[in-house]
Length: 408
Length: 112
Image (cartoon, rainbow over the protein chains, first blue to last red):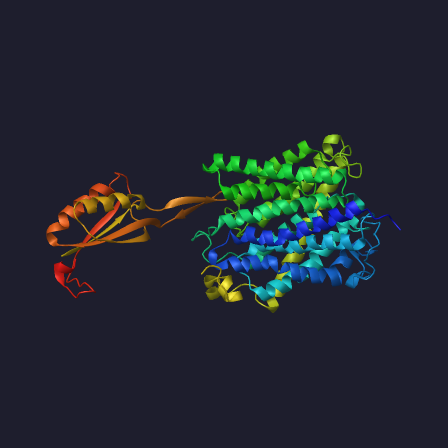
C-alpha cells in the first residue's frame, strides 16, 4: 500500500471545501447580474447542483469518470455507490491521499460545471426540465469528457492532451454546452428592445470574491499534493486573475470611456478560467500573459455577442467557453518541463507537436459537448417544455417557479 | 387658488425649497418620480454593451397657493431650478376647486 501523507491529505480536504464554496459563490455572481424578479431562481440553479450532481456522482459519476477504463471512452461501474473507495490511496490518481479524499475533491468539480452553464439560459428556463437536463448532462457530457482527459486510460490523456485543473473538462465543456443551450432555448422576451440590466452588482462582486478564493483550491488542489506544483498553480491562479482584471478594465476604459466594477469582476473570472488548464504547467510570467490575453479576448467576445444576436445571457460562452479554448491553447504555447517535469514543453520551448495535441483536444471537447448538449436539450424539450410560458417569464423565476420574492 | 406642479432635477430640490421658503410658502409635497422629455435618457455600460435608460430620476414638487401668489412662486421655482442645460424640467399650473384642512374642516384659502 502507498504511503498516505497527512500534509497532502489535509490540503486536498481543504481544497475540496474551497471548491464547494465556488458553487454558491457562482450563484451570487450570476444572481446579481439578473433582474430582481429572477435572483432567487438564478441562485437556485447553481445551489441545487450541490444536491443533484453529488448524488449522481456517488452512484454513477465517479465510477464513469475515474473507474477502471473501458476502451478509453468511459470508466466501468466498479466504483458505483463508492464501492472500494476508502482510506487506501488509488495510485492511478493520487498515491499519497485516501481514495475517498480524491473522490470528494473531484465531486466538487462535477457540481460546479453544470452550474456554470446556467448563466446562458438565465431568466427563462422551467425548473423541473432544468433538473432533468442537468443530471443527463452530468452523465453524458461531463463524465465521459472527464474520463477522456483525466481518467486512467482516457483516450485524450493517452494522446498527450494536458488539462491541469479543468480548462477542457470544466470550462470548455460548459461553455460549448452553453452555446448549444442559448441556441435551443432562444432569446429572452424583450431581447434587443429592453435592457436587461444587472439588479445588484455588489452581490456579483461578493460572488467574484468567493470564486477567486475558491479557485486557489480548484487550481492549487489539482496538484493533488501539498508540493511545489501546488505552489506554482496557486501563484499562477492569482497572477492570471489579477492580470485579467487589469486588462479588461483598461480595454473597456479605452473602448467605452468608463472603468466598470462589473468589468473588473468579469476580467478576473476570465483570467482565472483561462489559466485553469495551464496553472501547474507554466511559469508565472506566462500566467500573467495568459491573464492579459484572457482580459482582452473575453472582452472582445462578450461585446460582440449582440452583433450575432446570441442571448448568452450571462456570458458563459464568451468567458468560460473562450477561456477554456484560450487557456488550453496557451498551455500548448507556454508549457514548460522546467516548471513541471510531469507536464510537457510547449511551442515556445520548441515543441510544436504539443500545441497541435492541445488544439485537437479543444476540437474534440468543443464538438462533443456542443452536439450532445444540443441533442439532450431537444429531447428534454420534447418531453417537457424547457421554456417558461410568457406570463411566467414576465412574472419572473422567483414567483413563478419557487413562490418566493427576494426583496420585501 | 392654483396648484403648481414642478418637475425638476433632483439636486435642485434644496435650492427650490429654500426659495419658496423665502417668499413665505409654508408647505409642499415632494415625490421622487421618473420621466423624460427633450433630455432623453442616459447610457449605462455593462460588459461592453451600452444600454439606454429612458426614464431619468426627477423630483416633483406640488404647492397650492392663492392666485395672487402664483406668479411669484413660478418665478422662484424657475430661478432656483435653472441650470441653463437641457433637462431642467417643467412647471404646470392647475386651477384648484377647494381645499379642506382635515383637522379643523376649514375650507378654501384658510385651509392652504
